Length: 327
Ligand SMILES: Nc1ncnc2c1ncn2[C@@H]1O[C@H](COP(=O)(O)OP(=O)(O)OP(=O)(O)O)[C@@H](O)[C@H]1O
Ligand SMILES: [Mg+2]
Image 1 (tube, helix red, strand yellow):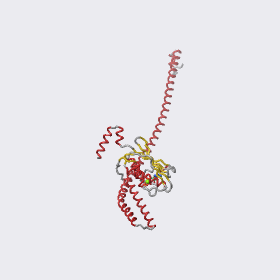
Image 2: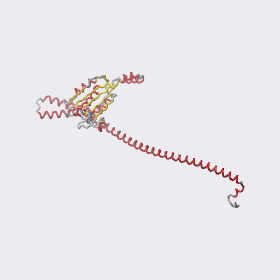
Image 3: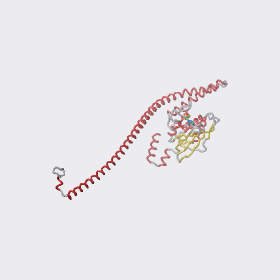
Image 4: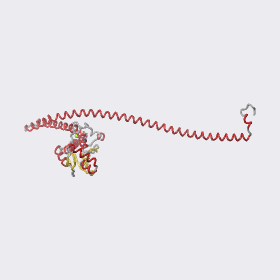
């Protein structure tokens, strides 16, 4: 080995020592290789993990974007709803004032028309037709005025135990039922705590709707009472009229929704208010050509009876003090 060789130091070692050094070096290199393989594997794993996390983050970002867009839409919808409600309540107040102011002159017109009719015994047929038209017009306006006032200015409930049969009897007296329509009243009866006059309005509205839906055709309207549970009665009002198309069902309880030319669209919203103020619910089941059924659920027990049944002392005490405050 020449003196200027970079491996000149090897001359200092015996062959055996050199071999040992070499073996140790190889071992070291092998261990390092193993270590670097392990590191590489871990790196690959981490990379895969990172990719997975990035994909998840992208997914979350996408979901958050969607959520944000949905929230934006929701805020927009709620704002529109609020504006609509504000507008409606302003219009409602105006409508209530006009309706209220119309009531007195309207009853003067009604009574005067009745008096003139009575004094004119020998009306010719033309005048009779005109007179009937006048009466229908008066009836229509007073119905709309009542509808508006019922809806816009609901008075507090005057609850007393009342028989459903009694309420339905009074309803029967109030409406003109066409000859081709048959009303089947319930075979059972029940006494519930309710505002007689308000429930009468509900049944008048529902039966009038059924009569209007059946129109000139022959039809049946059936009312049933079912004890759904110990403290809930289910009252159904069914007619075999044309039914309500699926796409309109959602809208029928909305104020001012009507498909009738002379409808106000306040009949069903008033019914809903009255029933909900009684602590009940009203639903509809209908399909085009399948008739319509309104389902009314009402509590059969008074608040007092319910509270004493549950035995909630705190609520009972609150109830007693709220009632004595009202007295
Ligand atoms: N029994 C029924 N059969 C078919 N459609 C019905 C029935 N009851 C209600 N509807 C539909 O629901 C709409 C809303 O009824 P609602 O009683 O609120 O108003 P209206 O009868 O149109 O007017 P109003 O009662 O104020 O004179 C009706 O216009 C009609 O389209
Ligand atoms: Mg109606």
